[in-house]
Image 1: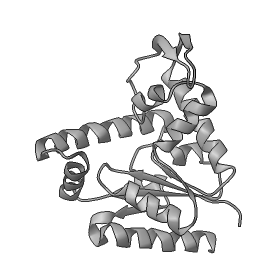
Image 2: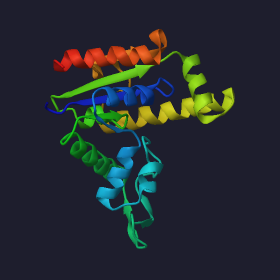
Image 3: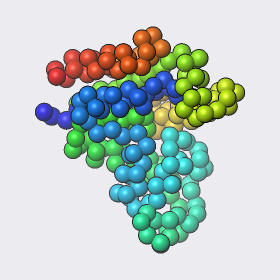
Length: 205
């Protein structure tokens, strides 16, 4: 069967990770969330920490990250600067390469935009009611409600700024995606099943 791709944009606490893992298992697909950062680091030669610190953020490094950058897997250091745009390009190349070899699920990181020319790509966006998202953030990060609210607001602001800047689209806007789903309506598990059937119908599986 010809490989196909599922990208999942998501609000923080909407269940994107759980649903992504479910779909990857059901369709025997490779799963990439933060895993793509390790791939990009390995293929570029930069240490993974550089990608992690800039993950789904715009403005972390200012116009350029100027420092002594450790190279991955060596004791050597690289005296130079690397721009956010260069990091995004390296991450994009890793996503494109992974998508060219096997069926994949990509979580966030503007993968829907990066793979916009791939006809075998389906783009999903997940939202959930505010209280459900707060509860999941509290549970996942083991924090009180006030801290969870700060994490949610900061995380969503960074995701939107990152996506809007690099894609010239609007994060979470319905017409950017093939399917938008509120996971609070039927729960995470049934939401995963709905998306599974949608994907099967889309690709005739």
